[in-house]
Amino acid sequence: MSILQNAIDSIQIGVEDFQSTDQRRQVSALRNIVAGMLLLMKEKLCKLSPDHDKELLIKKEILPEQQADGTVVFKGKGKKTVDVLQIEERLSSLNVVVDWKRLNDITKLRNDLEHYYTDRSSDAVREIVAKSFLILRDFAVSALEEDPIELFGADCWSVLLETNDVYVAEEKACQTSIKKINWKYDTVEDALKELRCPSCHSSLIESTDENDVYPDVGLRCKSCNHEFQFDQVVEECISYLLSGVAHHAIKDGGDSPYGRCPHCFKETYVFEENCCVACENELEFTKCIRCEASLGFEDQFNVGLCGYCHYVYEKSMDD
Ligand SMILES: [Zn+2]
Ligand SMILES: [Zn+2]
Ligand SMILES: [Zn+2]
Image 1 (spheres, rainbow, N blue to C red):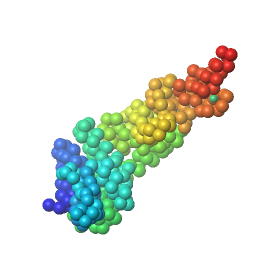
Image 2: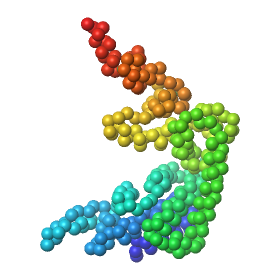
Image 3: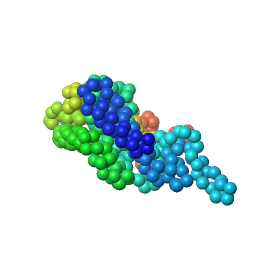
Image 4: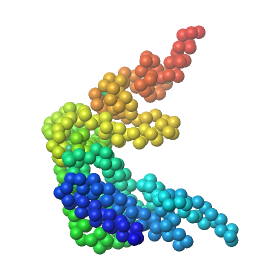
């Protein structure tokens, strides 16, 4: 069977699983839809492969091989095929446009749900189905040049379409309620994209009272009705938003944009905001009084001086 037919089957079966009232089929819905989506991308990689091997670009390992006439061609090695990261690398480098952030959100959520699925997680499943719809639509139209209704069948497509419409409407209502709160810090406003219910993982979260004053904001999950305080999830939101940036910054020899607050011990001290976004405490010393270098946690014990100026100062006292 062709990869394309496999992809279509997988998505259709996933949509049937999703419609089933049997809770046990929800995780299977996810698996099938996400697998189908990745197969569609592999189909595109095959289409883009050179004529001498139409499966070259889906091979995990590709090696150059010299021909009898001296020319070099690439050959696939082994049976293993590309993983999600390689699909992204290869399609991006071949200028195929996909919303990778959305795809990564979907695969991350799928992994989370495989581990933590409970009977209250069905809305998170609905979220994945809704988010997949947009990727499937765009990929079918722009990368495969196919009509999604013809490709996936009218029944399957109408379920995806409707799920997306309902989800988008609810998401909008939640965002409107969240926006009524004054979140005070730009970083926090950004991090709210990562807001999820600690109980069921849904991202459909609304505020319980628009008069709440930051950071004491009450929240309610629209999927499972669980109520919680922003304080309970602030650390996770900041980590989701900034851990990737921090990883890159540290790799390049720079500083992490956030760290552990010396007052409340949460990892929510954001340097750009000059304070901890959970307890709102500031560092006592932020700039070196001698050379104006910005000061971090480790410099707080140097009476307002940076490490270097403190060293110079101590030396001058010795003389
Ligand atoms: Zn919930
Ligand atoms: Zn703090
Ligand atoms: Zn200094």
